Length: 117
Image (tube, rainbow, N blue to C red):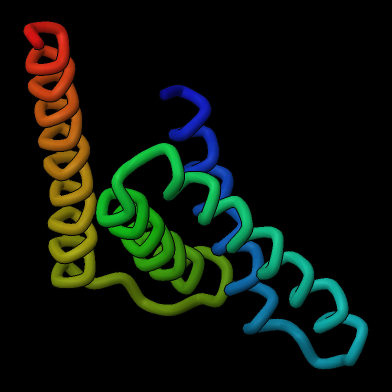
């Protein structure tokens, strides 16, 4: 299970890398780096989906991308940060944590049911 979450973390970090690349790429060789990163990222995302529920993986992947991109805009590209932006980032993070907890609960229920069969 730890390996699955490692894949989710890695794919989320790679997503931020290629999104950053979209913002700064202005030469063909930049894209020659970004495109293979995207391919590897989706291979790792696929691997994570084999080990965890796809909905959970995608929710974490999308939320990490949204939160990471928002923070990247503020800290790297000089965008402004507002209370509303902070509120919605917090809601995303809370939603991902709740989804993870629900996934763990359903997983333990499944293990209990299988153990009793």
